Length: 487
Image (cartoon, rainbow, N blue to C red):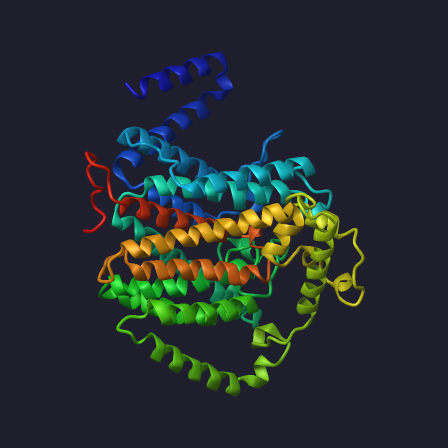
């Protein structure tokens, strides 16, 4: 009976408008597949497929422009499918859809405020290269991740949901490493390497930036570095829950990740990898060996730094040099300009997504910024971007979201027994802290609102933390406890 009404509706529409007939019945088939997926499989998988799609399917020629509406891209289509799947899941299961946490009101306030702020300044920018910046970043890095966070929170029902992001991140990790190593070989003169890279747009010099670095399938090497740092520590945790060939595969993948981070040439990635390592050694290591491991790794790093100092002290990124000063000076100037912007537009900023439009009119340093590519005009710090574009109000709201999300992880930690050894454990929370710390460290050096996959991963993991926090709360009298959390 559920399929009768849509079938009759599409048949009637096809009679009235014959040109829509093939598309209408194709939509009907797709809907049937979606219903089957909801009934048979776990819709939570779609969340992590959506996050991963930004590393593979976000290619301009694959996008569908719709006059008078936003551009439809494969990741956005996957997002819509995931939302429909969650809604069908809630309908089929008859479970309540909850909006019962204070953080959701905070998230709603951020979404509304950023949206109004962008609308008042305009949904497009007058700077050609950044024309889509306001709506692209608002939809991709603010609206969709926060909506998905809410769906993940409501869809979390069992402990095995904690495993999905690890499984899919590791699966995608092989592809990211494959591309990273091939790109490094290509950069260093291996003419055969581009023939093994797929899709071919990855080698297109007009696609994104950082063509001469190991950027994977992303538009820039920064997103690759963010993903690989996160993946390394996710693998360290996953190793504890698998055996045999899977464990060996994870060990091999983990060994391959540090060189691939080096291939990106992203210094923020190097810093984040080390800082996250300190957190992992102190709180994520087992058998109270964390401090000993940290001391051993520190000595190893000191020795490696001394041995490789001639390379590290250079300015050539692909040889390990970290002393390239041009980008450092550019960031100093951009920070000073952000301070000037905040002084002139303290409360509401210049409009979400409109920093570049305002910045190109400001006085620039001819010795640095004037000779650099246009992308260096964009603000290279997430929080300086937010305060410049949305003012102090937007900055306070954004910081409050991070604090509230971290607070939920602390609440969950207090509910988990120290002896918990399944996928949901206190070490699982350390991985979440590493993911958030990785995001925040790298956000000090570039605007991660351009990296939708990075934003999606952080906030979807936050939704998972909040969902488990809800499941482990004491239940009111007369309501059965949540099942399947400890199994």
